[in-house]
Each structure stands twice: as structure tokens, then as C-alpha cells.
Image 1 (cartoon, helix red, strand yellow):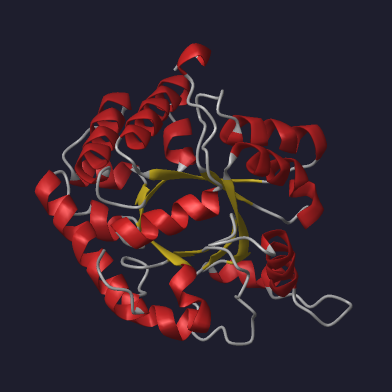
Image 2 (tube, rainbow, N blue to C red):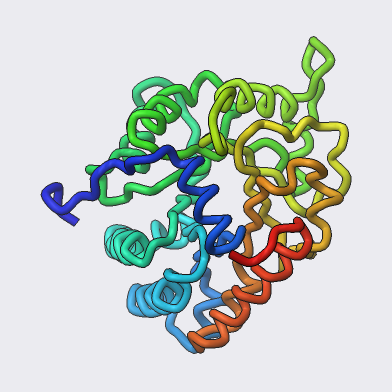
Length: 290
């Protein structure tokens, strides 16, 4: 993508665009995670050609169907500049198909470096421009300010790691601060403040694992989206969502990767798997088909 062909900034905030996509296409995010074993399962080589074939198949099969794609940047970065070129093409094609793009990069830094990350993913003039990006707040929530500012300026979103599904995350996220609150609760409180007054949905979300069970001790009512990895291969099911997320369940964006991708490379099978998950999520959270 050249600067002359760069997309313009969206005309509406990310939260509003996400709410519309979830209400019309269904509340499902499909990860694009082309790791070596999955490429092999598809009969593809673990090289740039296999990466490109895999990614193009997923985007062409599901781009007009799912609300959100979540490419995992690392699986493209491992091939260097040629892998990033595949990712850039996928972003353009997914956008043309009407899907929102959440870049799963989990970046976190301070000052001008955080500003550079924001420019990479949240600036319409960047080849890696995305509708939203995942960020790590563990250099302090305030360190993410350049990304929040860029998101507001360009109609984008940010998803902050809060209560992740990996067991190791608890040693940081559930650590108790001097004021008696946990680190995760502090992050959720910051996000609620950022989303205050936004309608119909704030643009700043939290990553909260769908495998964590009852989270009623945490206030998930942040007026923003809750990205919920863990559905499918990691063991959680759509039926678990009301228990985990309680009254905030309507704002959950369940993320499925292998549960859908394992049905490839057949495009019809990919579409059917995504449709099944979408229907199951709608049924679990009490939203009907559009």
C-alpha cells in the first residue's frame, strides 16, 4: 500500500462501528493465526507462499461474514518483510470485505516508542493500519496514552490486557495493590473512565479470558467491548459466556481461532464453522439474528 492509496480515518468511532458490526454480522471475532502446525494441517508449507495461501483463503471465505478479524502479528513477523507484506495485503482485502481488523500485537512501551507503535497500527497512513490493536499496560496504564490519543483522533480502538486466560497472568493481574484493589481491577477502572459517556459503546476494551469462570468479583461494566479469547480449542464454549461476564455479556467479542481455522482449507467448511459459533454465541448472550 502506498501513502496515496492509504485509507482515510473512519467517520465514526470504533465502538460505534463495532456495535453495528456485532449487531448485523454477529458477535464473533475470528483469529488469523497461521502457525506452522496449522499450515501443515492445511497441506501447506511453512513458508511465505503457504502463509499467503492460508491468509487469503481465510479472508476470502469469511471477510463478508464475520464482524472482526484478529490477525496475530507474530505469525507474520516471523517471515520478515515478506510476511509483513502478506499481512498488509490481508488488511486491505479484509477492509474491502467489510470486516473490522483488530491487530493482536500486544505492544507496550513508553513515550516516543509507544507513540511509534500507535503510528504503526492506528494511523490511516500506515500499511499496518487497523481498526484496533491489543496493548499491554504493565508499564503503567498512563504509558498507553499516545495510543489512546491516536485512537481518538483516527476513530480507532484499543484493547488492554486485563484478565488473560493464561495461568501465568495471575501473578501480575491479580496482584493486590497498596489500596487493596487488584492490578486487573485498576485497569478495568481506567478503561471505564476512558469510555465514560460514549454511546452506543466505548472504543476502549479489555481482554478477558472466556476460560476464567465466575468473574463477579470484578466490575466488567466498562462501557466498552470485552475481547474474550479461549472459545473453542482452549476449552471454553459460548454457553460459558453468561457465567463469566454476567451483565456485561452483550459487550463480549468472543474470539475463536483454531475452532474455526481447523476446518480449512475448504472455504465452505470455514464459513459453516464460523456461522455455527456465531449462532451459538447469539443464543448464549440472548441476541437474535440480524
